[in-house]
Amino acid sequence: MRKLRSAKDQTARHFMLGTAIFVILFLLVIGFSLFFKALPIMKEKNLWLLLSSANWKPFKGDFGFLPYIISTLYVSLIAIIIALPFSILTSIFLNSYASKSIRRFFEPVVDLLSGIPPVIYGVWGTLTIVPLISSKIAPKFVEFSTGYTVLAGGIVLAIMIIPLLISIMLEVFRSIPREMTDASLSMGATKWQTIKKVILRKSFPGIVAAIVLALSRAFGETMAVLMVCGNIAQIPKSFFDACYPLPALIANNYGEMLSIPSYESALMFAAFLLFTIVVLFNGLSRFTLNQIEKKYQLS
Amino acid sequence: MKYFEEKIFKIIMIGAAVIILGVLVYIIGTIFYKGVPSLTWDMITKVPSGGFYLGKEGGVLNAIAGSVFIIIGSLAISLLISIPLVMYINFYLPKKSLFSNVIRFSLDILFGVPSIVYGAFGFALMVYLGIKVSLMGGIITVAMLIMPIMMRSLDEVTRLLSRELPDALLSLGSTKYEMTKVLLRQLMPGLMTAILLAMGRGIGDAATVLFTAGYTDNIPSSLGQPAATLPLAIFFQLGSPVEEVQNRGYASAIILTVIILILSFSARYFSSKFSKNKI
Image (cartoon, rainbow over all chains, first blue to last red; front, top):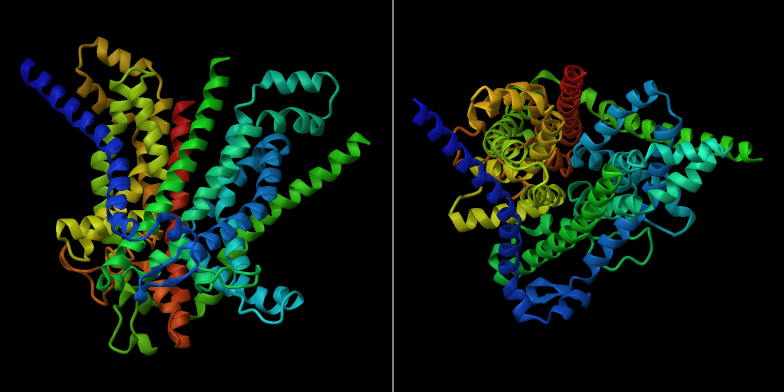
């Protein structure tokens, strides 16, 4: 009986250790297999050429990723620029001013915003943002725009990353020791002065980490962006041009690529690029956030 | 003067919060407003008929069934790995070990990997293993996507568990495995929250199933058959030039939104239950 119990215990322990090793290896396996899949195209073409050429003619063997990279950057940057003020203001409000019941009420709002599937954001974007841009906003700046633009992608993405920004910023604000804000308040500073001079300054690294994390989320977002961006392989000249971010490129072409081997490899290169950047950004910001958490837990 | 500045900023902050709330209402409102006229019983109870994509009758039962099959399968796989892993880092490893830090860090990074990358990797894996575009492929890929979500959320509640119960169990002579079984029962509400969160993400994601599960008008009857999914059904219907088909896309969007709303609120219900147990 006793033997059976300890045998069970040992088996369970080994299985658990196995899952732990699996999780760590999983990340490496994804990275390596994408890398090896992308290797043929990197051998065939100069890496720098792949990244800096704007010439995309897969059927002639030209793979220049520049339009896609620039599109991804533009869309994500617009998203951050729009989302950041809303997120910071709302998180400060929730952290310092809102009563408990308002905070309770707002939690499911943030939850729902982050839970709504990308495809629903895409539907909403095509129904509201795209026509708004083509009929109201764009005519003030350019002669003609379909509405399926960089700006539309940026706005939809902004809404999608707001919940992530808010929840991380709230965590960062919460990690600031109570004594610090109390000290400031007892010296006669107003709440707002305390926020400006203590909370925001103290949580600056955390806010930067949150931004980097949100950026990497924006880089990888596929479905919603694909539905509102227009998907034309060009370097967008203004916010009212169509663009074609990297994830949309992968999603749109995956099915038909198998006929040309270098095309498959090129799309895998896109996935590898995306993976590398996202892992790098995520790693850096998570590391910073963990560091912040640790620092204040010890004190 | 300093109070004046505070007042202005307070108004701006409330404004920002109200706008965020407004956007949420606007999104859900738009989907319902556009979709309700086309939402019929047929949508949920019938598979597409021959002329469905020309505006004839039928529904999206194929997609609903496909999504449900995929999520059940991938939940099973990821539970099988998530529970042992989380128990291992919390109860087997010492509280602040390097190994558990490395695991948690990998989970954080896996959590951030975009679903399209999982989709591409899943497809490459399927080609390597010789699996065709099928229900099976969809299940494996979605499992990869939801595993980190489930692990992180389960880990969060497990960390909150008090140290007294495990110590009591061990001092009564139970093995660690027996202790884990008892503690798992304590963690039930937390586990439910983790499952519901993972379900929400898995059901709504289109980029993972785009190349791995395929699309079909039938309800799949085995793991080797392709399976339709709700997000893809919405996407394809919207791409149609026929207006009626587009309208049904909006109706399908309602179905998906309602599923997400239910999952999200039940997750909240279970997590509030858990925190009540704590206090």
